[in-house]
Image (cartoon, rainbow, N blue to C red):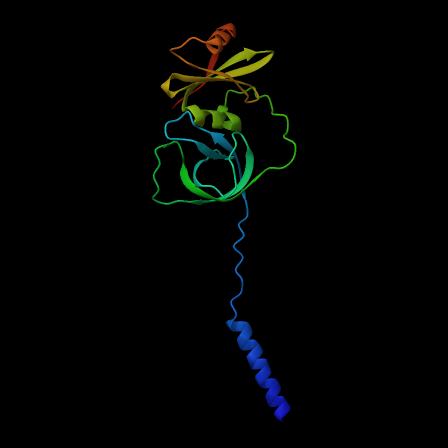
Length: 195
């Protein structure tokens, strides 16, 4: 009987110890959102912006330790919205803390050349629009393909090829090689205007 009693006490002690020992809580976060890092230094008070594939603009208040943002880097990330935060950038949809981030591995695919009149359906065009506060987009014939001029607020204009590569920039009140290149493209057509 004393062996059964001893076994009973041993079981109680094991169960009590197991219940009272705190279990380690996994705080691993899954990088579940895909997007692109964009350098928006051209806008007052702005620097890095994360633009999701859905077009949402996130202003990181804090990055993970040892991560260095790079312009046009495609990433997977997880974020937490920072409530009641304010910024002087004011181009973002949300201010966030980036909980985890990882560059997308693999060789980058050759960018698609877009022939479009619907810029909101093209990811690189949405990013470019956010970058200079675009008010008008004009489309031009360029090297047997197309080029797009993004006319921004503050008279800042950016000319992109159909793959989203920035060809050049100029201010509307200045003449430079970019504005001369634009004249050489002939007449463009307006494909988008700020509503």
